Length: 250
Ligand code: PEP
Image 1 (spheres, rainbow, N blue to C red):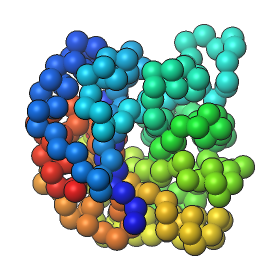
Image 2 (image 1 turned 180 degrees about the vertical axis):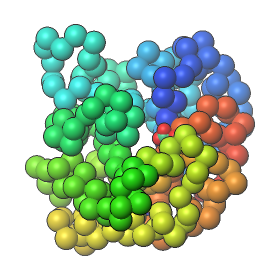
Image 3 (image 1 turned 60 degrees about the horizontal axis):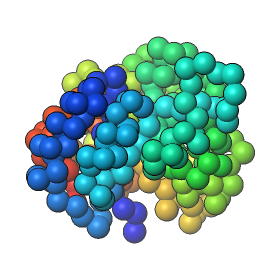
Image 4 (image 1 turned 45 degrees about the vertical axis):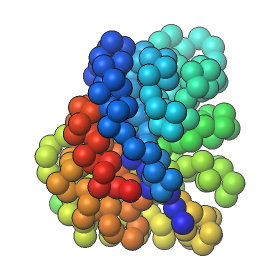
């Protein structure tokens, strides 16, 4: 059985002091569960503070990483540096990276390879824009992002991969995808993995949903058979709100 996964993407929010205050509020309310993995993705600069302050069973993720191992790449952070925190996961190819920082599928693939070869978990984000959905291109876009993003990976590598389906039109907009829309894409992703890697790989793969998730909508979405959890932006910034979501995914 797949363990559910809930990832908090704090984006460019919180100083280390605010990160510490979050965990001061979060930790007394947090109840771990063997069926659910909780991952916090703060900014790079908050990772060491989060490591000191978080409950032991909560894992850490970076929001990005370099596609290069080391060298003259001013301002970049490598997988080895993240491992020194230590950090468990890296979010790769978030739509804000794709759209605002013009990351291509090929650059994203390089990051996936660095993360997997470095022994960390990769959370590969895929998702269509509003226009692509309107133009009935959703599944085509997802297929391209998966095809390129996972290129060169073996079945064994895939064990370290989680896919996050994040329709761009639902991120930070308050407009959540319906449970039916989410399930349709998640099923498509699992079928893609089945065809490319095999049935066992497909059934073990975690596919999580992101886009305006809140306590009020998570239960219905997470109850779908191909939904294994959520990637949460805005609603993960406040400890009490995030806990309310976690209570609904057990
Ligand atoms: C995200 O940043 O990945 C996200 C899903 O944001 P929000 O929950 O705010 O829509």
